Length: 333
Image (cartoon, rainbow, N blue to C red):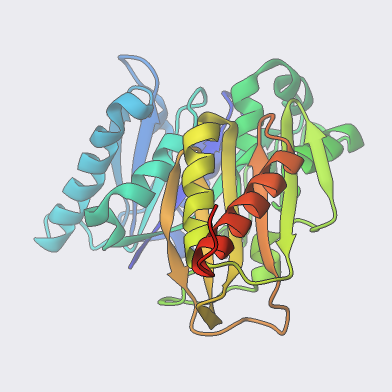
C-alpha cells in the first residue's frame, strides 16, 4: 500500500517551506507530490526543492466537492504511470492543499473511491499553524479553524520568530484535543514525527488505539464554534444500530460533522472490534481488527463538530439502540 499524507494549513503558514525541506530528507525520498494551488497561475510548486527520486505534479484550483473527481483522476494517473515505470517508483504521496482549501473533500476522495482505496492508505493529516499570526488567523478565518480541527498532527511554524504563546496552545487544544502539537524550527522537523499517524489499519501496522483516538472521554472542548467530545458505551452495539447511527448523522449533520473516529464493540462480533472513520457526510467502511488492542472493550467515538450537541447524539444512539433491540426481540414498535 502507498501512504498518502495530506499537508494543509492557512495561507502563509509555511507549508511550502516545510514540504521542500522534507523532500530533501531520506525518509521522504521516492515521494510523489500533488500541489494544489489557487488561481490560474501558481508559483508554490516552483519553490519546492525535491530530491531526484521525487515527483511533483501541479493541480491548479480549489480542491472542493465540485472537482473531487479531478483529484481522483490525478492520483489514478500517478499510479498508472508508476505501474508502467513512466515515473520513479514512489512509495508515498503528499497532497499539499491550497491555504484557502477545506481538506475534507480530499479526505472524502480517499475514503470513497474504490480504485484508490485498493492502492493507497491515508497516513494522516498535518496542519501547519503560524506561531506569529496563528491566533489572530484562527479568530478571523473559519477555514483556518477547520483545518486545525481535522488534523492528526498540528505543526507550529515560524517559532524562530516567536515563541508559541500559551493562548495559541490553548486554542489549538480546544479546537483539536486529539492531535499532538509539534514544533518546527526554521521550517525543519524530524520527518519521523510526521510518519506515525496512519489510520488504524490491521492489514498494515497497528497503532496504539488510545493515541489514535487521543481525546479524554470525559473532556468536552469548545472553541470558535467547534466542539470536541467523546461518546463512550459500556454495552456492545448491534451492527444494525451502528449502521443506522452513522447513516442518520451523515444525513442530518452533513458539513457540521468535521470528523469522527472510533472503535466500537459490536454485539455480533465481540472479539473483533470495528474501527470507524468519517468526514462530514462521508464514512469509510468499518475496518475489523483481528483482536482488541487492550482489555478495555468500551466503545469510544470521538467527534469534532460544529454545533452538534453531544446530548443529541447520545439520545439518537440510545433511541436507535432501543428500537433495534425491540425489533430483534420481536416486540412491536
